[in-house]
Length: 157
Image 1 (cartoon, rainbow, N blue to C red):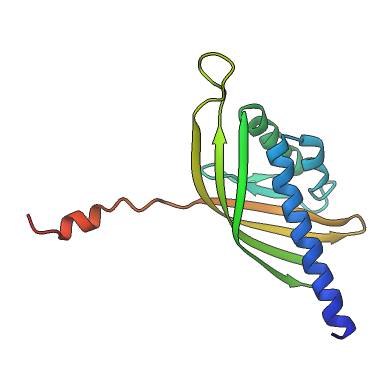
Image 2 (cartoon, rainbow, N blue to C red):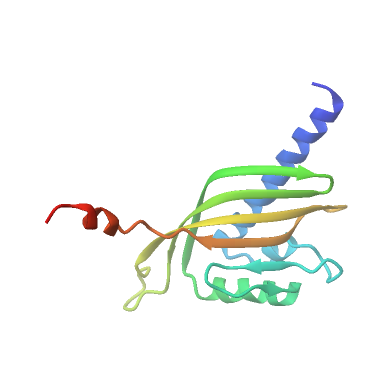
């Protein structure tokens, strides 16, 4: 393997690690770690689209949205599938499917509230910085479930 291929493979591994760290910080509810993964400052405006939310722009609004999510989510776990990394220069694009299992506060007692599963397709854009790869943008879109209604319409009565 020549030096260029070795560097590209190392870059991809670093981007994959940064992507994993993003989801790990969410699972742990660690807002400080999550904040450190986003581009610093406002010179490159960061953006985020949570499923069903409007576009959030600017580091402050994006990080506040994660604080709200973390404060209102008792439990969350991400199982990432279909992870793909594409790179050009100092920009990396990660696409994946977030298989999410989450639960809110319980209504009675100390037990965890009901768990809910959700599929979200996500695009995470990273930029290379002197401090490693940092998130520039996250966009999550829900995957709509098949209802099977079309099959019922085609069935003979």
